[in-house]
Image (cartoon, rainbow, N blue to C red; front, side, top):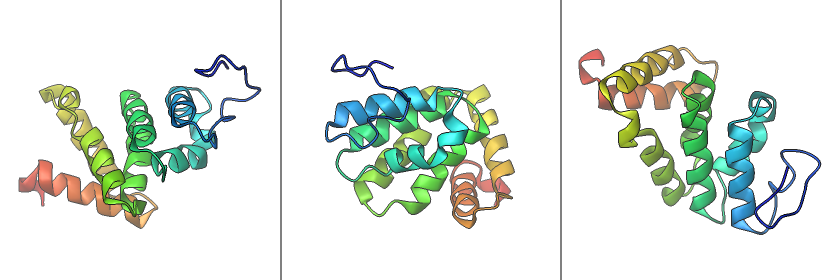
Length: 141
């Protein structure tokens, strides 16, 4: 994989701990859209909760949500539950509410995934899914 500075790396996750935010953000984008994403969930969570730059959080969250699947949404909800920084939590919440995902069809898919995640094995994911459902579909609460 080539990073923004032109270096080649041996694995898709190499660079996740780089001091350069743009390298970490590039790793998040690439990993989120890769076939390895589910096997590297912990690395993605670390990038979503990046303590140094919310651009890493934003890029990784947007890439995960562009997958348009339950895994990507689950990772973002897990990070939202575990976020200790208000700035990080705001970036994660903004990614979920991004207008491009709120077309009627997109909203229906999102609500269906949120309903499914209310039965997730992780209590934090369940909590965040329920909170979003209450906000987006109050008649279901």
